[in-house]
Structures are given as C-alpha cells and as structure tokens.
Image 1 (spheres, rainbow, N blue to C red):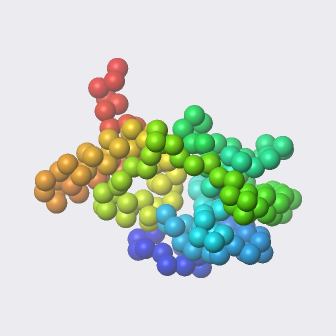
Image 2: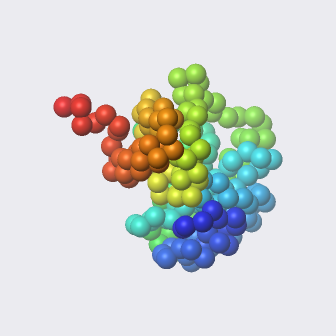
Amino acid sequence: MSSKLTSVDEYIGHLQIWREEVTLLREIVLSTGLTETIKWGGPCYQWQQNNVVGLAAFKSYTGIWFFQGGLLDDKQQFLMNAQEGKTKAMRQWRFFSKNEILNAPIREYIFESIENFKIGKKIVATAKDKVVILPQLLQSTLDLDAGLYEKWLLFSPSSQREFAEYISEAKRDTTRKDRLQKVLELIGENKNLHDKYKK
C-alpha cells in the first residue's frame, strides 16, 4: 500500500487475500454501532473516540484486535496475547476461514467491550509502560503498514525507545533515512537494534 489510506473501502480494495473475510468482519463490527476510521494503516472502530477494535489481514490469517481485550470474559479462549508479558490490554482473535467468522460470537465480545468503556473499566498504561515518542519518519511508515505495526508491537518499550532514539539522534536527513531503513529491516526480522552484540 504505497499511499496513505483514507477509507476502509480503500483498505479492502488493496487487499490481495482475505478481502471477503475482512468485508464480513467489517459488517459485523459496524452492526454494533461503532464509528469507523483508519488508524495505523488499517480499519479501526471507536466508541466515543475510544478505540474498541481494529481489523487487519496478514498472509496466513485475518483478525480482529480488541484494544481492551484483557478485560473480556473470554471463557472459550478465542483471544490471544501476541505480546505475552508485554501487553496488558490488547488481545487479538485470529480467523483462518469465512466459516470461522460466521460461527464466532464476535458481536457479544464487542458489546462487552463497549459496556466496559461505558462504565469506565479500562486497563491504563503504568509509568513502566509509558508511550514511546516516535520520530515522524518512523510513525508515518508504521501508519501505512499494518503488518509492520503488528511486528513493532512485539518489541518491549525499551527496544522501541532504542529504535526511536537511533533515528532521532541522526543530525542529517540522509542519515535519518538510512537509519530508518535499517530499523525497518530489523523490525521485519523481529530483531532488536543491538542483537548482534548480545551473544
């Protein structure tokens, strides 16, 4: 996806695979009354400007992300934490076929999440989990690529900070761009900035 997407229709139009499944997920989510927008290069659905769920499609699966999924009563264990030990709130639900989506109680999970927002039940980041300020070059790239953004989320806050500082500390534009490319390659390979020195 070479240019910044402005609508979910555009996002779906760019999909090579999972188009039918993402369209179905979109219909299910919209039927719950959430507001549709684009964030981080993919569909995001909000209740009163709170991010409730997001959609994404990858090579082997498509899925729905619950921003406060850690609070849901997931008795059947549909949800998974892709960043075990790092993420307290975010959970994802992966689907590998249209039938899985049709038979899943997705609306119930969304309504429970909306209800949690209504009563003010929310997992709040602690000082230890504080947000990393990203250089614009890196932020813009992550906004355009949901797959890369998912990999970015797998890194600890300290590793994310190292990447951000590595780019920001460059004095020249050309150096910043070179460093960005190096960082993007490392993120794609799930490697930290200083991995090669940690043996």
